[in-house]
Image 1 (cartoon, rainbow, N blue to C red):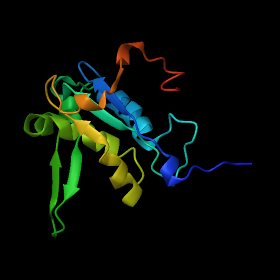
Image 2: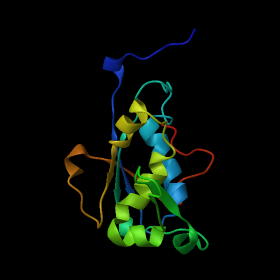
Image 3: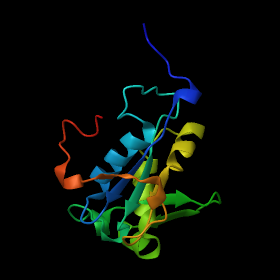
Image 4: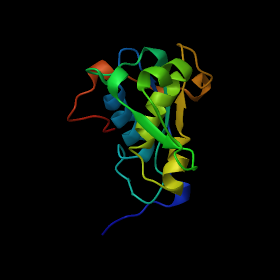
Length: 152
């Protein structure tokens, strides 16, 4: 028999990740699993079981290979001929947090649930953040084992 968790039984915790020298894609997969709640036994695809993630030192994140210069992000203004393109290098200069936010956003479901889950991601430049009162659990990226990512 499958047991479903009710909304009032869901509890969220906080995690802190230091993005110093982290690869964007691998960091985004870890963050998206936590935000969606896939690290919990009670995961249900249609409900928001996720936890909050605080990412610090985002300006020191990196890409593998030549993706930092060669990768392209596209967006459309809605007008004819209004396609705009940018690279992670240009985007990183303007808004360092936007590169990681885009990577995580594309790993979440589209629609209302995905937008709600994306609000649980908090990204900051530097080592300081205003969420220390939530006592976030620190995730050490170097010690994470690929087979046992976040099982509690």
